[in-house]
Length: 405
Image: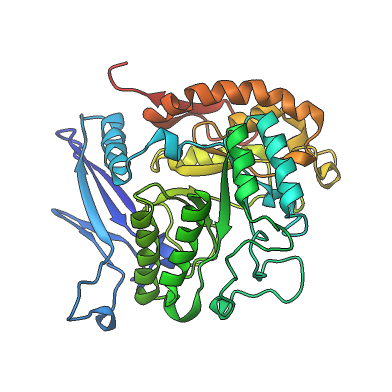
Protein backbone atom coordinates (compact mmCIF):
# COMPACT_ATOMS: atom_id res chain seq x y z
CA UNK A 1 0.00 0.00 0.00
CA UNK A 2 2.94 2.36 0.41
CA UNK A 3 5.56 3.56 -2.03
CA UNK A 4 8.55 5.69 -0.95
CA UNK A 5 10.60 7.37 -3.68
CA UNK A 6 13.79 9.40 -3.76
CA UNK A 7 15.41 11.45 -6.50
CA UNK A 8 19.04 10.46 -5.98
CA UNK A 9 20.28 13.59 -7.79
CA UNK A 10 18.27 16.29 -6.00
CA UNK A 11 17.47 14.45 -2.76
CA UNK A 12 13.77 15.19 -3.16
CA UNK A 13 11.48 12.48 -1.75
CA UNK A 14 7.78 11.68 -2.00
CA UNK A 15 5.42 9.04 -0.70
CA UNK A 16 2.36 7.50 -2.31
CA UNK A 17 -0.24 5.69 -0.19
CA UNK A 18 -2.92 3.52 -1.70
CA UNK A 19 -5.64 3.86 0.93
CA UNK A 20 -7.04 0.36 0.80
CA UNK A 21 -7.00 -2.88 2.80
CA UNK A 22 -3.94 -5.12 2.63
CA UNK A 23 -3.37 -6.36 -0.90
CA UNK A 24 -4.52 -9.94 -0.32
CA UNK A 25 -8.00 -8.81 0.74
CA UNK A 26 -8.60 -5.82 -1.54
CA UNK A 27 -11.71 -5.95 -3.69
CA UNK A 28 -11.07 -6.66 -7.37
CA UNK A 29 -7.32 -6.77 -6.70
CA UNK A 30 -5.28 -6.79 -9.94
CA UNK A 31 -2.26 -8.46 -8.31
CA UNK A 32 -0.19 -5.34 -7.57
CA UNK A 33 -0.67 -1.84 -6.15
CA UNK A 34 1.71 0.32 -8.17
CA UNK A 35 3.54 0.41 -11.47
CA UNK A 36 6.78 2.37 -11.72
CA UNK A 37 8.63 3.20 -14.91
CA UNK A 38 10.78 6.03 -16.20
CA UNK A 39 8.81 9.24 -15.70
CA UNK A 40 5.61 7.53 -14.53
CA UNK A 41 4.09 6.18 -11.31
CA UNK A 42 0.61 4.73 -11.17
CA UNK A 43 -1.56 3.49 -8.30
CA UNK A 44 -3.50 0.51 -9.60
CA UNK A 45 -6.77 -1.12 -8.54
CA UNK A 46 -9.38 1.13 -6.96
CA UNK A 47 -11.49 -1.69 -5.50
CA UNK A 48 -14.49 -1.61 -7.81
CA UNK A 49 -15.85 -3.43 -10.82
CA UNK A 50 -18.25 -2.01 -13.45
CA UNK A 51 -21.14 -3.67 -11.60
CA UNK A 52 -20.36 -1.57 -8.50
CA UNK A 53 -21.02 1.72 -10.28
CA UNK A 54 -24.44 3.22 -9.62
CA UNK A 55 -25.54 6.10 -11.82
CA UNK A 56 -27.77 7.51 -9.07
CA UNK A 57 -25.12 7.96 -6.35
CA UNK A 58 -21.39 8.28 -5.87
CA UNK A 59 -19.38 5.14 -5.14
CA UNK A 60 -16.40 5.65 -2.87
CA UNK A 61 -13.28 3.86 -4.13
CA UNK A 62 -9.79 3.29 -2.78
CA UNK A 63 -7.87 6.55 -2.90
CA UNK A 64 -4.28 7.47 -3.64
CA UNK A 65 -2.41 10.12 -1.66
CA UNK A 66 0.86 11.76 -2.64
CA UNK A 67 2.99 13.68 -0.16
CA UNK A 68 6.28 15.59 -0.33
CA UNK A 69 9.05 15.12 2.24
CA UNK A 70 9.38 17.92 4.78
CA UNK A 71 13.12 17.86 4.17
CA UNK A 72 15.55 15.96 1.95
CA UNK A 73 16.33 12.93 4.10
CA UNK A 74 14.66 9.72 5.27
CA UNK A 75 13.32 11.25 8.47
CA UNK A 76 11.82 14.13 6.50
CA UNK A 77 9.92 11.68 4.32
CA UNK A 78 8.68 9.56 7.22
CA UNK A 79 7.72 12.69 9.17
CA UNK A 80 5.68 13.91 6.22
CA UNK A 81 3.97 10.53 5.94
CA UNK A 82 3.13 10.58 9.65
CA UNK A 83 1.90 14.15 9.49
CA UNK A 84 -0.66 13.10 6.89
CA UNK A 85 -1.66 9.92 8.75
CA UNK A 86 -2.21 11.88 11.95
CA UNK A 87 -4.63 14.23 10.18
CA UNK A 88 -7.02 11.41 9.24
CA UNK A 89 -8.38 11.18 12.78
CA UNK A 90 -7.89 13.93 15.32
CA UNK A 91 -6.21 12.33 18.32
CA UNK A 92 -7.95 13.44 21.53
CA UNK A 93 -6.08 12.10 24.58
CA UNK A 94 -9.15 11.90 26.81
CA UNK A 95 -10.94 9.84 24.18
CA UNK A 96 -8.23 7.90 22.38
CA UNK A 97 -5.52 7.13 24.94
CA UNK A 98 -6.16 3.88 26.80
CA UNK A 99 -4.73 0.97 28.70
CA UNK A 100 -7.52 -1.46 27.97
CA UNK A 101 -8.07 -4.80 29.71
CA UNK A 102 -9.97 -7.49 27.79
CA UNK A 103 -10.34 -10.88 29.46
CA UNK A 104 -10.58 -12.95 26.24
CA UNK A 105 -6.82 -13.55 26.23
CA UNK A 106 -7.12 -16.09 29.06
CA UNK A 107 -9.40 -18.25 26.91
CA UNK A 108 -12.34 -18.53 29.28
CA UNK A 109 -14.43 -17.22 26.39
CA UNK A 110 -17.93 -16.45 27.69
CA UNK A 111 -17.94 -19.02 30.51
CA UNK A 112 -17.19 -16.54 33.31
CA UNK A 113 -18.83 -13.37 32.05
CA UNK A 114 -21.42 -12.05 34.50
CA UNK A 115 -21.91 -9.14 36.84
CA UNK A 116 -19.91 -10.48 39.80
CA UNK A 117 -16.99 -11.49 37.56
CA UNK A 118 -16.96 -8.11 35.85
CA UNK A 119 -17.06 -6.27 39.18
CA UNK A 120 -14.09 -8.29 40.41
CA UNK A 121 -12.25 -7.54 37.16
CA UNK A 122 -12.79 -3.83 37.68
CA UNK A 123 -11.28 -4.08 41.16
CA UNK A 124 -8.26 -5.98 39.82
CA UNK A 125 -7.91 -3.56 36.92
CA UNK A 126 -7.97 -0.60 39.27
CA UNK A 127 -5.27 -2.22 41.37
CA UNK A 128 -3.14 -2.72 38.24
CA UNK A 129 -3.75 0.77 36.86
CA UNK A 130 -5.77 0.23 33.67
CA UNK A 131 -8.02 2.93 32.20
CA UNK A 132 -10.57 0.82 30.26
CA UNK A 133 -12.26 -2.52 30.89
CA UNK A 134 -13.89 -4.28 27.95
CA UNK A 135 -16.54 -6.97 28.16
CA UNK A 136 -15.84 -9.29 25.26
CA UNK A 137 -18.24 -11.83 23.77
CA UNK A 138 -20.77 -13.09 26.33
CA UNK A 139 -22.22 -9.90 27.80
CA UNK A 140 -25.11 -9.94 25.32
CA UNK A 141 -28.34 -11.96 25.36
CA UNK A 142 -27.61 -13.61 22.01
CA UNK A 143 -25.14 -16.47 21.85
CA UNK A 144 -22.38 -16.02 19.28
CA UNK A 145 -20.57 -18.56 17.12
CA UNK A 146 -17.50 -18.08 19.37
CA UNK A 147 -19.36 -19.11 22.49
CA UNK A 148 -18.04 -21.91 24.69
CA UNK A 149 -21.63 -23.16 24.81
CA UNK A 150 -23.53 -24.90 22.02
CA UNK A 151 -26.06 -23.28 19.75
CA UNK A 152 -24.30 -20.02 19.01
CA UNK A 153 -24.38 -18.33 15.62
CA UNK A 154 -23.89 -15.01 13.83
CA UNK A 155 -26.47 -15.86 11.17
CA UNK A 156 -29.77 -13.96 11.25
CA UNK A 157 -28.84 -12.16 14.45
CA UNK A 158 -31.82 -9.84 14.18
CA UNK A 159 -34.38 -12.64 14.39
CA UNK A 160 -33.81 -12.00 18.08
CA UNK A 161 -34.48 -8.29 18.67
CA UNK A 162 -32.86 -8.58 22.11
CA UNK A 163 -29.62 -10.13 20.81
CA UNK A 164 -27.54 -7.04 21.70
CA UNK A 165 -29.15 -6.28 25.02
CA UNK A 166 -27.33 -7.31 28.24
CA UNK A 167 -28.01 -10.94 29.13
CA UNK A 168 -30.58 -10.72 31.98
CA UNK A 169 -29.31 -13.95 33.55
CA UNK A 170 -25.73 -12.62 33.70
CA UNK A 171 -26.49 -8.95 34.24
CA UNK A 172 -29.88 -8.84 35.99
CA UNK A 173 -29.39 -5.14 36.68
CA UNK A 174 -28.19 -4.33 33.19
CA UNK A 175 -24.78 -2.74 32.71
CA UNK A 176 -25.57 0.31 34.82
CA UNK A 177 -24.00 -0.94 38.09
CA UNK A 178 -20.87 -1.99 36.21
CA UNK A 179 -20.51 1.38 34.50
CA UNK A 180 -21.08 3.16 37.81
CA UNK A 181 -18.48 1.00 39.55
CA UNK A 182 -16.06 1.79 36.74
CA UNK A 183 -16.59 5.52 37.18
CA UNK A 184 -15.88 5.22 40.88
CA UNK A 185 -12.59 3.49 40.07
CA UNK A 186 -11.67 5.75 37.16
CA UNK A 187 -12.18 2.99 34.57
CA UNK A 188 -14.24 3.31 31.41
CA UNK A 189 -16.41 0.26 30.63
CA UNK A 190 -16.40 -0.88 26.99
CA UNK A 191 -17.98 -3.77 25.09
CA UNK A 192 -17.36 -6.14 22.18
CA UNK A 193 -19.70 -6.16 19.17
CA UNK A 194 -20.04 -8.28 16.03
CA UNK A 195 -22.06 -6.62 13.25
CA UNK A 196 -24.63 -8.78 11.51
CA UNK A 197 -22.99 -10.09 8.30
CA UNK A 198 -26.25 -11.04 6.56
CA UNK A 199 -26.76 -10.05 2.92
CA UNK A 200 -23.95 -7.54 2.55
CA UNK A 201 -24.35 -6.01 6.04
CA UNK A 202 -27.91 -5.09 5.16
CA UNK A 203 -28.82 -4.68 8.85
CA UNK A 204 -26.27 -1.91 9.38
CA UNK A 205 -28.86 0.50 10.77
CA UNK A 206 -30.06 -1.98 13.38
CA UNK A 207 -26.44 -2.67 14.33
CA UNK A 208 -25.78 1.06 14.68
CA UNK A 209 -28.94 1.56 16.75
CA UNK A 210 -27.80 -1.18 19.16
CA UNK A 211 -24.55 0.71 19.89
CA UNK A 212 -26.30 4.05 20.05
CA UNK A 213 -28.67 2.60 22.66
CA UNK A 214 -25.70 1.45 24.75
CA UNK A 215 -24.26 4.95 24.50
CA UNK A 216 -27.49 6.72 25.37
CA UNK A 217 -28.43 4.37 28.20
CA UNK A 218 -25.04 3.68 29.80
CA UNK A 219 -22.59 6.14 28.28
CA UNK A 220 -20.60 3.29 26.71
CA UNK A 221 -18.66 4.68 23.76
CA UNK A 222 -15.72 2.34 23.08
CA UNK A 223 -16.56 -0.75 21.04
CA UNK A 224 -14.42 -3.62 19.83
CA UNK A 225 -15.76 -4.39 16.34
CA UNK A 226 -15.14 -8.03 15.45
CA UNK A 227 -16.18 -10.52 12.79
CA UNK A 228 -16.46 -7.92 10.04
CA UNK A 229 -17.11 -9.25 6.54
CA UNK A 230 -16.62 -7.08 3.47
CA UNK A 231 -16.60 -9.51 0.53
CA UNK A 232 -17.96 -6.94 -1.92
CA UNK A 233 -18.41 -3.21 -2.37
CA UNK A 234 -21.99 -3.20 -1.09
CA UNK A 235 -21.00 -4.75 2.22
CA UNK A 236 -18.11 -2.28 2.57
CA UNK A 237 -20.42 0.67 1.92
CA UNK A 238 -22.92 -0.58 4.49
CA UNK A 239 -20.20 -1.19 7.06
CA UNK A 240 -19.02 2.40 6.67
CA UNK A 241 -22.62 3.60 7.02
CA UNK A 242 -22.86 1.67 10.28
CA UNK A 243 -19.74 3.33 11.70
CA UNK A 244 -20.73 6.79 10.45
CA UNK A 245 -24.17 6.60 12.03
CA UNK A 246 -22.70 5.74 15.44
CA UNK A 247 -20.09 8.50 15.17
CA UNK A 248 -22.76 11.04 14.26
CA UNK A 249 -25.16 9.97 17.02
CA UNK A 250 -22.42 10.19 19.65
CA UNK A 251 -21.16 13.56 18.39
CA UNK A 252 -17.79 12.05 17.55
CA UNK A 253 -17.24 10.50 20.96
CA UNK A 254 -17.37 6.88 19.77
CA UNK A 255 -14.12 4.92 19.58
CA UNK A 256 -13.90 1.73 17.57
CA UNK A 257 -11.28 -0.93 18.25
CA UNK A 258 -11.36 -2.40 14.75
CA UNK A 259 -10.29 -6.05 14.86
CA UNK A 260 -8.08 -6.78 11.83
CA UNK A 261 -7.01 -10.29 12.81
CA UNK A 262 -8.81 -12.25 10.08
CA UNK A 263 -10.94 -12.15 6.97
CA UNK A 264 -11.53 -9.30 4.54
CA UNK A 265 -11.21 -6.28 6.80
CA UNK A 266 -9.83 -2.76 6.67
CA UNK A 267 -6.16 -3.08 7.65
CA UNK A 268 -3.51 -0.42 8.21
CA UNK A 269 -4.43 2.19 5.59
CA UNK A 270 -8.22 2.08 5.40
CA UNK A 271 -11.05 3.10 7.77
CA UNK A 272 -8.43 4.90 9.88
CA UNK A 273 -10.78 7.72 10.84
CA UNK A 274 -12.77 5.65 13.35
CA UNK A 275 -10.41 4.65 16.16
CA UNK A 276 -7.54 2.21 16.60
CA UNK A 277 -6.67 -1.27 15.37
CA UNK A 278 -6.90 -4.44 17.43
CA UNK A 279 -3.86 -5.97 15.78
CA UNK A 280 -3.54 -9.64 16.70
CA UNK A 281 -4.68 -12.62 18.77
CA UNK A 282 -1.85 -14.22 20.73
CA UNK A 283 -2.22 -16.88 23.43
CA UNK A 284 0.11 -18.81 25.72
CA UNK A 285 -2.37 -21.69 25.39
CA UNK A 286 -1.06 -22.41 21.88
CA UNK A 287 2.42 -21.05 22.40
CA UNK A 288 1.99 -18.29 19.85
CA UNK A 289 2.74 -15.49 22.31
CA UNK A 290 6.32 -14.44 22.79
CA UNK A 291 7.09 -10.90 24.00
CA UNK A 292 9.73 -10.46 21.33
CA UNK A 293 7.29 -11.51 18.57
CA UNK A 294 4.87 -8.83 19.72
CA UNK A 295 7.72 -6.33 19.94
CA UNK A 296 8.92 -7.28 16.46
CA UNK A 297 5.48 -6.75 14.91
CA UNK A 298 5.12 -3.31 16.48
CA UNK A 299 8.73 -2.39 15.66
CA UNK A 300 8.34 -3.29 11.98
CA UNK A 301 4.99 -1.55 11.58
CA UNK A 302 5.95 1.62 13.44
CA UNK A 303 8.03 3.00 10.57
CA UNK A 304 5.00 3.12 8.29
CA UNK A 305 1.92 3.10 10.56
CA UNK A 306 1.28 5.40 13.56
CA UNK A 307 1.94 3.12 16.52
CA UNK A 308 -0.45 5.08 18.75
CA UNK A 309 -3.28 3.71 16.54
CA UNK A 310 -2.40 0.08 17.31
CA UNK A 311 -3.58 -1.95 20.29
CA UNK A 312 -0.62 -4.10 21.32
CA UNK A 313 -1.05 -6.96 23.78
CA UNK A 314 0.68 -8.03 26.95
CA UNK A 315 -0.39 -11.31 28.57
CA UNK A 316 -0.42 -13.09 31.90
CA UNK A 317 3.09 -14.54 31.68
CA UNK A 318 2.45 -16.96 34.55
CA UNK A 319 -0.15 -18.97 32.63
CA UNK A 320 0.75 -22.14 30.72
CA UNK A 321 4.41 -22.23 31.67
CA UNK A 322 4.46 -25.94 30.91
CA UNK A 323 3.74 -25.21 27.24
CA UNK A 324 7.12 -23.52 26.88
CA UNK A 325 9.15 -26.11 28.85
CA UNK A 326 12.78 -24.91 29.01
CA UNK A 327 12.45 -22.33 26.22
CA UNK A 328 14.85 -19.48 27.12
CA UNK A 329 12.52 -16.95 25.47
CA UNK A 330 9.34 -18.17 27.19
CA UNK A 331 7.07 -15.33 28.38
CA UNK A 332 7.69 -16.26 32.02
CA UNK A 333 11.41 -15.50 31.60
CA UNK A 334 10.60 -11.81 31.10
CA UNK A 335 9.78 -9.34 33.89
CA UNK A 336 6.15 -8.26 33.80
CA UNK A 337 7.37 -4.65 33.60
CA UNK A 338 9.11 -5.59 30.35
CA UNK A 339 6.11 -7.20 28.66
CA UNK A 340 4.10 -4.08 29.49
CA UNK A 341 6.89 -1.80 28.24
CA UNK A 342 6.75 -3.55 24.85
CA UNK A 343 3.33 -1.92 24.37
CA UNK A 344 4.12 1.63 25.50
CA UNK A 345 4.56 3.21 22.08
CA UNK A 346 1.12 1.85 21.11
CA UNK A 347 -2.14 1.54 23.04
CA UNK A 348 -1.47 -1.17 25.67
CA UNK A 349 -3.90 -4.09 25.63
CA UNK A 350 -4.03 -6.10 28.86
CA UNK A 351 -5.09 -9.37 27.22
CA UNK A 352 -5.97 -11.32 30.36
CA UNK A 353 -8.24 -11.68 33.36
CA UNK A 354 -7.04 -9.33 36.07
CA UNK A 355 -8.41 -11.68 38.70
CA UNK A 356 -6.12 -14.40 37.37
CA UNK A 357 -2.90 -12.48 37.99
CA UNK A 358 -0.61 -13.41 40.88
CA UNK A 359 0.17 -10.79 43.50
CA UNK A 360 3.61 -10.12 42.05
CA UNK A 361 2.02 -8.83 38.82
CA UNK A 362 0.57 -5.87 40.68
CA UNK A 363 4.05 -4.59 41.47
CA UNK A 364 3.95 -3.25 37.92
CA UNK A 365 1.17 -0.83 38.88
CA UNK A 366 3.80 1.78 39.77
CA UNK A 367 5.24 1.60 36.25
CA UNK A 368 1.80 1.58 34.62
CA UNK A 369 0.62 4.63 36.55
CA UNK A 370 3.83 6.49 35.76
CA UNK A 371 3.37 5.63 32.09
CA UNK A 372 -0.18 7.00 32.19
CA UNK A 373 1.21 10.40 33.19
CA UNK A 374 3.39 10.59 30.06
CA UNK A 375 1.44 8.39 27.62
CA UNK A 376 -0.03 11.31 25.72
CA UNK A 377 3.33 13.10 25.50
CA UNK A 378 5.00 10.00 24.07
CA UNK A 379 2.28 9.63 21.46
CA UNK A 380 2.51 13.27 20.38
CA UNK A 381 5.88 12.50 18.83
CA UNK A 382 6.78 10.81 15.57
CA UNK A 383 7.47 7.28 16.78
CA UNK A 384 10.03 5.34 14.77
CA UNK A 385 12.02 2.14 15.36
CA UNK A 386 15.68 2.22 16.34
CA UNK A 387 18.30 -0.48 16.84
CA UNK A 388 18.09 -3.97 15.43
CA UNK A 389 15.03 -5.98 14.45
CA UNK A 390 13.74 -7.72 17.59
CA UNK A 391 14.63 -11.42 17.72
CA UNK A 392 14.80 -12.06 21.45
CA UNK A 393 18.47 -11.16 21.67
CA UNK A 394 18.93 -7.89 19.77
CA UNK A 395 19.40 -4.38 21.14
CA UNK A 396 16.31 -2.59 19.95
CA UNK A 397 13.75 0.06 20.75
CA UNK A 398 11.84 3.15 19.61
CA UNK A 399 12.25 6.89 19.52
CA UNK A 400 9.50 9.47 19.89
CA UNK A 401 10.65 12.62 18.11
CA UNK A 402 9.01 15.96 18.86
CA UNK A 403 10.09 18.51 16.27
CA UNK A 404 11.76 21.56 17.84
CA UNK A 405 12.23 19.83 21.23
